[in-house]
Image 1: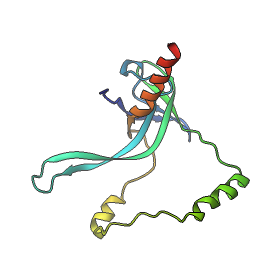
Image 2: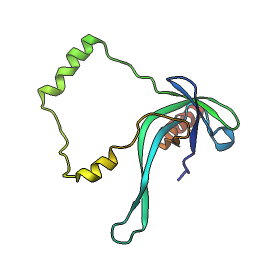
Image 3: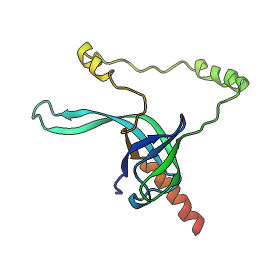
Image 4: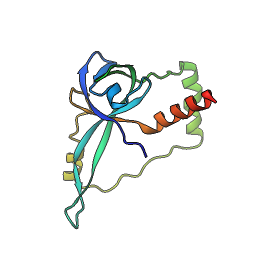
Length: 147
């Protein structure tokens, strides 16, 4: 299994574009996707006290548009916004079949406050982690095109 490329936001260029501190020397290529994440405090096993992992909460996904040796430029993903007519038509379909809701867990207010103190804004120094599944799909497509 491949090791994920990890880095940090090195600079904010504008509302859509950032520089990250990983580049060609780290294996970054144009088109790669990264998640910008915030890491919570390490999770400890309640029985042993052993650290068992870190919860990473995604803030956004970015796509690399330019790569240099030690850094890359990445931008937020683009998406298509349906027209008002399509929204009006398609927006009613799920309601015909009912709506699925997720049941809340009975979490203590103290623990819930800790979880909600995470800042969703993107800042210099935020961690970025390569999205492996998208990279694998792109690599497979390129290999099929070569055959």
